[in-house]
Picture (cartoon, rainbow, N blue to C red):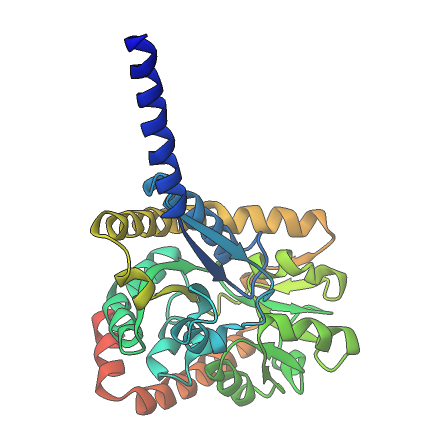
Length: 329
């Protein structure tokens, strides 16, 4: 009898503990404008799973993809800061209107390799974190994109191929660089680019194979010219008020999950390019390698990039110039 009462007491205590844990469960929404199969999309899922484990189920993160929340990268800072969503992923360059420093990782031909992109990210991270903190946001982790190239209806190998080309770029620097190269660029979010492709007002897209695969750009643009324009970063940010509201052990869980996610994202980049190219080839995309690009186009792109970077230096001031010096530019 006493044993039965003891067992009952233990079960009752366990039930009360479970109820307390469930009632204490925190639910967050996190969003990106990119597909679930893209690098940022995979980062959101990884972070959600890692945080669930680290918090022993006390924090549940619900990821949203393809701008399902209605928030695009350029709007992400305001959306998280104002409580529309708890956390979000945004292409850094798309937040250039908030601060030109966010354009750093997508400056043309600044970082064409994974190693160069990693160094740039390490140098820029403190500045990104400080700037987000000023908006009452916490930088969780960075996500690198594979190198950007040009999706088009033909190979882009000479200056004439760029002349007047209605191309989507992902930030203001891209508009400056491609305008200087003779194209007719327009700065569009990835979500807004697809309707323009369908109606024909845009006939080329600056993006990686990663983004192109996620949106099936090959349905409209069967050529991908490898120009290694940039290895841009996406930044995942969290409301500082949501973080501060957590007890210390859960803040530690968030930090651990974010650190693990960042490590995973950079690990994914190591094999991502080959995987993307294989997927593109399987869907009929003609890959135009850098070796096929004419010397004239190379010189044009280089000169156009120099113009765009010089203008960025003026906009970003001493802070921007200092960051470039730290990566040897």
